[in-house]
Structures are given as structure tokens and as C-alpha cells.
Length: 328
Image 1 (cartoon, rainbow, N blue to C red):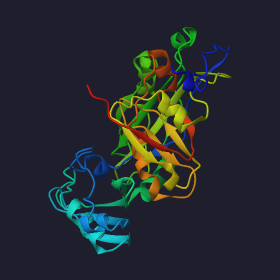
Image 2 (cartoon, rainbow, N blue to C red):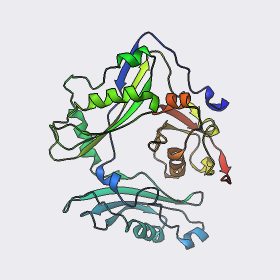
Image 3 (cartoon, rainbow, N blue to C red):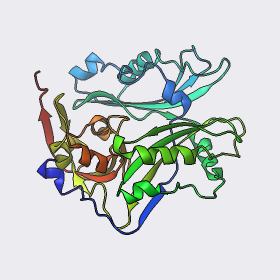
Image 4 (cartoon, rainbow, N blue to C red):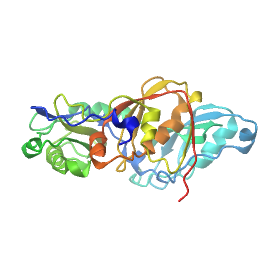
């Protein structure tokens, strides 16, 4: 591990008492969000209108996309826009290619998408969201398990071996009485913990379902009490000091309302990292969020075990980053 980050990942401490718990249940991406085509990163972003680029104009467009079936182009409603009609037309042209192939015939979906056009980053896409997420989020309240515990038991053999780890689970409920479809993600070292989670989540039910499909994401954490297994607060330069930046990176946080903090959960290479704002929404930060979602850390296996699925508060100072791509 690089010296800049070494102090942010604590050493393993085998305390006498171990615990296993599930963090707050969170609504996962809807089926429509997950199956939208083109897939990322092929989806890209709208073209920056040439005249606006030449005149140094910037813009922002937020749209609602209504899909009426698996092969239908979206009906586009502009929810909010800034900068002029050229940006709106560029967005309309871009989203016309979108489809939701997993929709049943006669099905419908409403997705929300925002785009930012800035001189610093050209055009970038914000987070894609399902308009019906609020309804699905309400259904999380009825999640149940026969054991009356939503947390699995820490496997005895793993506890004796001093094995710690985190398991990220994505559960899709389609019936009030049937088990969910399960995807689990963990480091190879946490395989026994992953198996324990898979056995446990097979017993989960969502009895309040009435025809909806709900995807739940939660993180199961197996740690020894009193141990700081994972990240401590760190700065963006510390994070980037141990990141694989061979593809290059160009960012200007002085245009993002710096300094500020973001929540960062390291999920690579299995999933995109999770980056969440801690203060007011600022679309100028979208390029930073996008870069942090794809960053991979160049650490040894033991350190990657410690930080996988761990949450860190990353402080972003005012700085300009211009790292050119490395040649093979």
C-alpha cells in the first residue's frame, strides 16, 4: 500500500468478540435502470453543441423518459433546463436511442436523467433514476426473516480463523411469498462469509408486495468489535495516490464549490464504486463522481480485503488534476 493511504487503512485486530450485521437496507436500481440500453459505458453522453462550445456557453438539462414497451423509443419531457434550446435538442437526439428491453409487452417505465454541459468536462450524465423508486422504497419496511433477525450468524469457523470481510448482496423480490433472486459480491478471502449470507438471504421475504418488482441492496459486515477494519477519513489526493491512473485523469475541483466531502464505497472490480454527496446537489461535481466510481486502487490483496465495500468520507480540496494517459 502507498504511504499516502497506509494510515487510512487500519491493521487487523483480533478482539475477543466478533459481530455480524447488515447495514441499512437500500433500494437498488430498478429493473428498467439496470437493463436500459445502450449499456454503460457505451451509452456515453450527448454531443456538446458546437456553437455553444465555441461561445463558451454551459448548460444543464434534466429529462423524464417514458417507455411504453420493450422496443419503444422514449417520450421525452424536459423537467428543467439551463443554457438554451441547443442543449435540449442535443439531449433529445442522444436519448432517442434508449430502450428498456426487459419491459413486458404493454409495460411502462419512467426514468429520470440529468446532463451537464461544462467547459471543464464537456458533457456528462448524472445518476439515472426510476421515477417510481419512492413507492418501492416504502416497501422495504416489510422485509422479514423467519429468524426475526435480518443479520446472518457469524460462521464459527471464520470467527476462529480471525476472518473478517464484507459481502454485498443484491436481492430482487418478485413475489410476497417466494425467495428473492440473489447476487452476492465479495473478495475471494471472504468466500465462507459469502456462503453464510447466501444461506441467510434465502429466507428473506417481502410480504407487502402487490405486483411490484423491488431490488434491495445491502451490505453484510463481519468484523471484530473494536477493530477499525476498513478506511479512515481521507482526502482525494490520498485516494488518487494509490489509484491506477494509467488511463489519465483531468479534473478541476475549483469549479465545484470546494472544499467538500463525499461518501465513497470501494466496490471495484466487481461493481462501480458508490459515490454519494454529503451536502447540497451540485451538478458541477458530476465529472468527479464519475471518475471516482471507476477508480481502482493499486493495493495488495490484504489491503483490498480490508477496504472492499468499506465506506470512507473523502475530503475534496481545491485543486486541478491533469494526469495524461500512460503509453503502453
